[in-house]
Length: 128
Image (cartoon, rainbow, N blue to C red):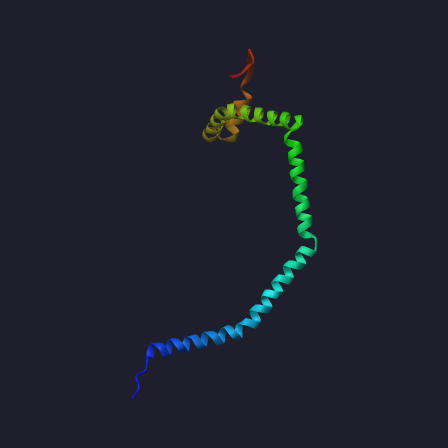
């Protein structure tokens, strides 16, 4: 009587099954791989990649010329000055929102219409 290696027989059977599956999958995977390569090649040959790269290059050239221009610096300064002015108005806007919350839109409208604008040394005050 011969002793059998049950584990070895099972592992050997699994290896054989895996080899058969890989042989049956190989033609399909090879065709899929070839199709992907052909698709990528067609995409590159279509000029889409070249066109996209040219667009990026053009945009970078524009950005380079714009960032150094006097107009860009001027416009940037105007924009930052506007942000600074808005930041100084934030407390007043928050107060108006709180009043509007307490009085409602109609009550806030009446209050604003009753105020007079007075400017002293460049500072504006609203007086009732």
